[in-house]
Length: 439
Length: 166
Image 1 (cartoon, helix red, strand yellow):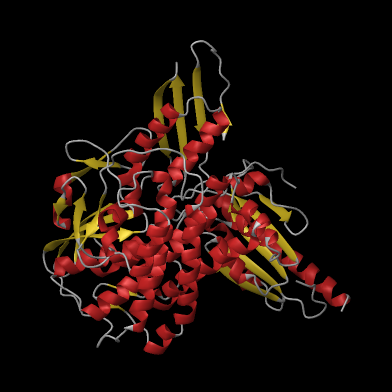
Image 2: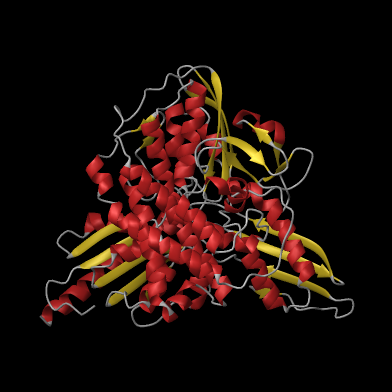
């Protein structure tokens, strides 16, 4: 973090710059300007090159979309594959049977476990413990970090088994999988999954004891809900303000805007207004559908369905890890190998729409394809672009409520606030920004 | 982990994202090493740089050389070297990584938990552009070649030194 010296003590102008947002996926920065005690400007700057995937997809075969879009994110490739597959299958009029749908759900469990655990232990917990990072926690509490590492690895193991590898899985295809696992291969994971469930319960207890800054707002939470299962791949898009639509109606209710300070688009509700996607939204609108152990863990952590403090998202993420472990155990124990690993899709001249629940929130895909299966047009709206306005709104509130903090403390609190959303700003970048002497 | 006194093999890990222009530097260097180090006691692998995958990869290794892209304000394509087993990675390096948890985080996490291999050397290739779908720049390709030669030389020195003491 760098600070610009204050040249005018009266009236006081404070400029806080967080040049590189550590522990946030991608390349981002934050500029804040406070003039005479008022927040004059909040800009979450994203200076990754504009995403070119939508353009890249045009002219490609419809079956390539899952593998191409998986490259958008190294942390949540399954989400991109799931939304791409469902959208293409919708365009082809293809509905998968329960065994294949369950395998997809199990794959998503792996991604939720791995992604949430990474964020809880390595990226967000340090904010609450006054630590600069997970390394500092590891020095004091190595067993705690080892627990997080093992838990994440178990999520990765699911990805490896069903996806073919941990990063950018290659076994997912439109219509199902290239290869489905045997019952023995899945059963071999059960001991680890049972350990993971206990570790996840311990994680909820750990994070629930943190001190949480006060910040509450009456957000519009948006997520999937199908009324039967905690949402991952299926359901209608609903909100706590009465939204209830199908995926194909998304563009009528949500729009994306270009803002000068960011190369990422900002999504908002048609008619104006920010909204909130991700674990907080899922919990607010689907807590009744959590699995029994996850429900008990949420209750013991003092969570109510109306939790509106975004800092407590870390507890909800931990509850979702409990859910994902419990659900994975159920799916493994009841696994019935599908009669075939995939159903061959028959492309038509059609547009397919899908929304699935990435760890960070809803991920919308829309594809227009034509016979014999060429993509004419693609639209992808990731969760971080949908939360970006809400993040900036939160930052304004945090700045107004904490103007008495020093610049360093305020910068820290702003970073913590951004991390409430586990933002995936660019996805798949891998870059070290440093100052160091050359040898 | 104790120092092996015989048949030392060096694990070389090339880190990066192949589809992101200069960011592929570490992995392309690893491929050059693989192609031109016949007879050298090396094991070469490529990873995207996620901390836990790195820690898994080196969990049974004694001597590790990592090659990664970096941005430290040096001339593009220049190569830097750290002996991470002798001293902590620069604080700015660990703090500045914005992708997940990367090489410096993995090293320092492992050190904090007593899980760092006995010897860890990091080579950094200075990069400029990491846009999706771009190709590595000529300066970075030159840096890749330089890093590959340096890694092979160092691996030979490490293994020969170890074998003399066996």
